[in-house]
Amino acid sequence: MGSAGNSRGRQRQRRGEPGTGAAAAVQGRCGRFSLVKMVSHRELIALIVQQLNKFNPENQSMEDFLSESAMILQTLNVTEEKFVLDTLAGCTEYKSILDVVVNAFYVQDGRYCPISERNLYIVICYLATFQLEEIGLRHFSRIVKSLDTAKMQQFLRFFFNDLYLNTWIKDEWSHFYDSVYVKENWIDPLLRWQPKVQQLIEKLTDKLSNRTTTVKTSRVTQPKEFNLTVPKPRAIPPPTPASLPVLPKRQPVPPSIYKPPKERKQLEEIKTKNIQKAKDLLLEANTKQFRCAAIKPEKRENIHDSMESKPVFKAQKIQSKIDNIPIKLNTAAILREGALYQRKLEEELKRVENLQQGAGDPSEFLKWQKQMRGKDLEEQLAEIECRRLQGKLSYEEAVLAHQSVIQENKKKADLLREEKTELMHLYAEKCLQEQKEMKELVEQVMEGHKNVKQVKAKIQEYKQQIVQQVCEESGELLRQALEEKEEKNRKRYELIQQIRAIERTPSIRHKFVDLTETGGHGLFGEMSIVELRERLALLKEAQKAAEEEKRDQIIHEKQAKEQFILDKLDQISQFRAELGRAAALKKYVI
Image (cartoon, rainbow, N blue to C red; front, side, top):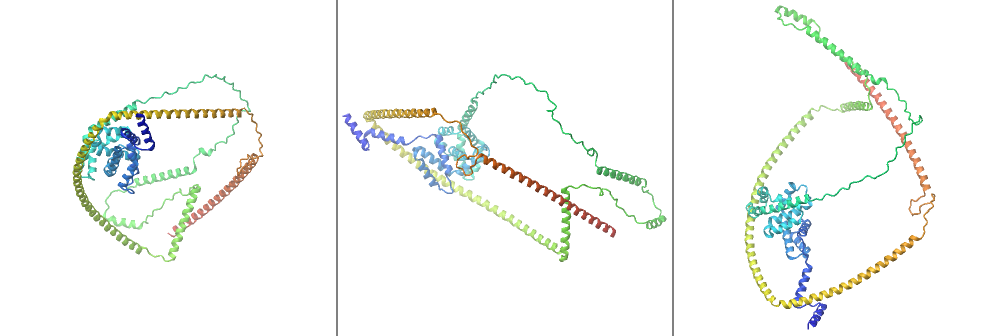
């Protein structure tokens, strides 16, 4: 009877028909669990971060993003898929307030953290703010411990800071939502969880300290010196007169180096003469001072007449001899002075040309230019005043807009509270419905316990069949593996015999080289060694000819430059002579 049942079961399996009873249920359950693979917390967080990196709100809507993510997450089980989708939706919905915390973290404590891990901190911030009550501290601790310890310890210490939560985080979140709503629903829960999260942070800190202290120090290899025989010192041969180097005879130092220049001596002499002349003048002025005495009235007229009869004193300029000192000019000074005289000549020619063309007095143009500049200044002042008034108006409009935004946020918060109460009612009804379903399921399970013995017997038979099939398949596989191994060893042995036979055959090791033949590689520019040497010799000759030509060109350029400087010197001497002649004529006319 049992063998007939087993044969009928095998026939159903061959035809693909579903089995009956507990065996079919076990097969279905085994197939279902074989398709679903349990994923670790680290992999789940990495999957969420990967999806957030792909999301672009400008080119993709929220619904399309969640639908595509659901298609990708079909390999997960129901709870993991729900967790991933809820986290993705929350991170995109509350992105503005999460960015406030993450941006501040990168500015203060996370300056050296890579920007590619930004979405990782956004996910942890979302779980700590919105999902900590739901998933619990235990599950949250597992997620945090599965990630990088140093990064999580740094971010949680920054986020769960009492001072930060009560001050700038609360103020920044109040810009997006109502301050009362932010404090009651987000800040207060975070402050309640803060002591327990602080314990988690201390555990992470201890883990980091243990990691740093238990680093194994590698043993450094100590080198040892070789025990070599010390060679005997060689005798130094005595030097011969021919081997000694002969130093070339140096030229003596010219005596002009140790003598001061003549110009300096002339300058010092002129300086001493001027000082002596000034001292003489000072002494004469001190000896002939004016005497303080009252002049009588009868002598005033005689003094006045004598003063008028005296010639008028004319001051004479002291002619200095410094200008007559010859000064040695270099090339740059010569070119600079020549350019100066050339520029003066061009300016003088331009002025004469303008006078010939009838250039007039520019006073009217300057007066008109002054008036126009005054008008431009008045227009600029009027424009500045207009901008200032516009800035005041825009500031008042911004204040009114801010007030309207606050009122709209209050209305949105009221609507969110109403929606929350409705969702709470729906959640309560859903819980009641789930409790009823659980009661029905418990009743069904109690009824199923009555036929436990029959189910166990059928499961035992099914397991025996599976074990027998596995044994047969493993024996067949083992036999095939042995045959493949023997065939592989046989081919390897034949290959070794062939290699040894090739090694035993003698080979010609001496190759005669002909320098006039090419290598025969089939290249375009292929040539023999003799031809290569000839071409190298030709190239060296051409290079030497080019160097000679370059040297001649440099000499010609140098000679042309010297001639140009000599011409400039002649031109400068002519200009100086003309300027001296003009100054002499001007002095003679005066």
